[in-house]
Structure formats: structure tokens, C-alpha cells
Length: 110
Image (cartoon, rainbow, N blue to C red; front, side, top):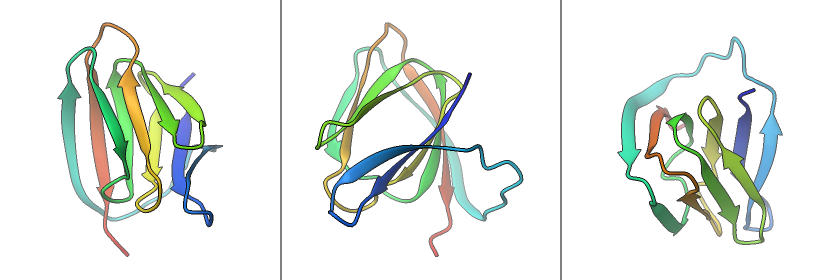
């Protein structure tokens, strides 16, 4: 079963994780939609999201970690709401032999 997971910046300046209900019926203006792919074995060290965006995993399994040790795994079909645009950030690493293919849906900044 696919999930919707939110990474967000807390009032403590740290990135945190929560699972959300699917935003069925939600309509938001988007700035850009694009597809990216990282090869097997890829990882990205500490960073924040460049903007509020959905990241839909199409292929690959990866583990995300926040600086205070919260971790979660994304699999194909899962949607990440990357909303930690400030603070301590997060990192990710691929944990299977597949590339990570994902679709970004960048929201219009409010």
C-alpha cells in the first residue's frame, strides 16, 4: 500500500516526519513537474528541500533520515511531501539495486 509521508521543519529547527492522509481532491497551483533518476547505490547527504513539493517514487527503495535520527523508507507508489525547506534537513540513500526514478511536483510559492 502506498503512503503519503511529510518531511517538515519544526519549531525546534529540526526536520521531522509524519504520515498523512492522502490529499484526495486537493487542488494546488504547481510551478513545475519533472522526472529525475539517480543510479543504483546513490545517496544525497544533508540538505533541505529547495521548495515545497511532492516527490512521487516511481522506481527504487530508499531510506530517509533526519538529523535527530527519524528514519523512513519510500517504495514505488509512495508520495513524499518535502516541506522541510529550512532547518537541519534530511539525507537519503538507495537501499536496493534499482535506480531511484521519481516525479517532482513543485508547488507555487505562497
